[in-house]
Image (cartoon, rainbow, N blue to C red; front, side, top):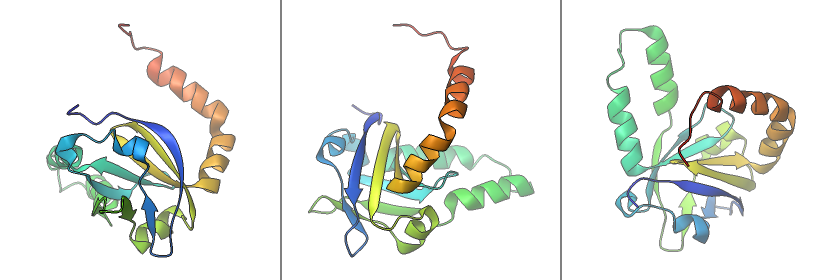
Length: 154
């Protein structure tokens, strides 16, 4: 598997050093070319997102083409790259999250990992379930709008 294609939902807990045990089932899904290394950054939602390093390099190369002479572009790029941190799974299977990123996402102890496509989202568990409860009808409509025009080959 060369492209990242993550799936699953995993509850985890931060330890006193802001580390969490990366779930074994999710670890099996990491492409070899990622070398157990990710770029961790703020998401536009109240969570953090991790991209396998090889996918991050593609994303970074792509956004370099955005004009730096447009204020909206600069604002978006600053947000995207602000606090972006390279992280790796250590020998004990853990990843450490910098304090500034934990504060942004409101993560204190209990965390929920949401893995899909080439991204892994890290949510404060209570924040995620409140978000889901508030937005379920709106999300159903968004899914219909976004996917409704696609033709699938099964």
